[in-house]
Amino acid sequence: MMRSLNAAQMEVVRVHRKWCKDSIYALQHDQPVPQYTLFLSGPGGVGKSHVIKIIHHETIRLLQRLSGHYDPDELSVLITAFTGTAAFNINGMTLHSALGFGGGPKKSNEYKPVGSEKLHNLRLRLGKLKLLIIDECSMLGSDHLYHTHRRLEDICGTCDPDSRFGGVSILAVGDLFQLQPVGQRHVFDLPTDSYAKLHGSLWEENFTMMELTECVRQREDQDFAQLLLRMRTAECTEDDITVLKSRIISKTDPHYPSEVLHVFKTNREVDDHNKDHLQKLSTQHFHIQAIDTKKDIYTGLVDVGSYKTSNDRGLKETVSLAVGARVMVTVNIDVSDGLVNGALGKVVGIDNTQNDVHTVLVTFDSDRVGRQAMADSQYKDSYPGAVPIKRQTLPILTGSKQSVQAQRAQFPLTLAWGCTIHRVQGKTLDRIVVSMDDKSNFSDRSLSCCHEPRHDLDWSVPSRY
Image (cartoon, rainbow, N blue to C red; front, side):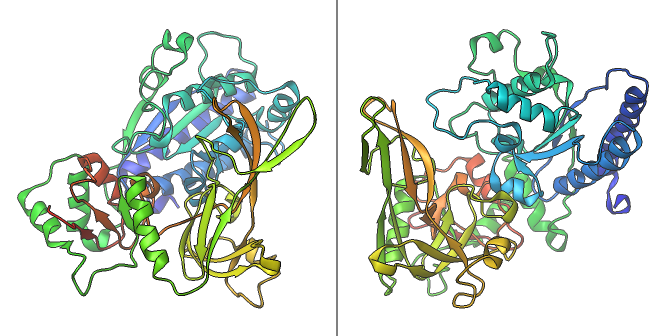
């Protein structure tokens, strides 16, 4: 594995290997384990994920096996990412799942400690954790980082006010030339917590940076790779502009790639595009209503209906589907099986026995997604290669002040011939169409985050460039 590294990647691994050796000495001599907080930066395609895998392997090989401090089932290192897609790509866990952050609806970014029983279980599982790896850290907001610090402090039982992250080392990996986290400040900004602000930015005060710059993903097309890097920093040349303009294509062009994923800035544009494509399908259309239930805490009466909410948590009030529709998963069903928020596929079957839709069969674009679900599927003979998707149930907040908690049951799917730009952040795609008409008003940074394909880019410009 080490032979596959370039010089910059090797230097990162050397720094980590030295930390492993110093930590082994500290553990064997009953001394505090040294801590590092490192930001591994770099654009897409420079091999950040490869370095993560090697660092994970080295930590287990050196620290866990040679220190004499760990039983086989104890964790010294944990790989996480903020989203299910990113976690699946690196064979890790979501940060929320790993650290036991509640999955319920929230009305604020306030940190909420866990109960004593849950904290006890977290300490049993993570009590000897020495390294937390967070991939795609650009998706992590400043409040998320602060909550991670607080949760690790709780797990490690740290009382020192100068301690950070409970003494656990943090390797944050990503590219800060990405979009701002949804509903959060950038990871390097101050958190919203008034007390936490007094200590400054956790990111600015604690993290040092190492950077990878050599592109290894698009080796067969270095000109294109370098163009993407210049777009990332808004340093395009005249030649770059010429190349990009050559990819402009009109919707009236006979070769227009209508079936390629389209990216828009607004949800309204996405909805219009998806509805247009759905209407073109001749198969039966299904408009599936969510089943919402709420219980009166005083009378015990259960009310069933469909309620308005400002945060549906990925379960829409109405899901429109048909066989042949392009769809995207909207919640993390099973991260280990790749059934994560953002997984793309196509509907190949809808089981509506007794006029009630209870299973949607989807073939996913990646053959890594849903392997276990396919193996366990009762439909594997009639729909080979299809993953059965059923309703998921999650708590939501409803009412005029979003103060009433209800349970929503709905299929975690949405139409996906088109999506918003946030939905493609961190994805690697073969082809993509980016709408850049007047109403989209993309910023330079919005454009650069789309440019993570393996080969070609198609540009759709309905009005003007």
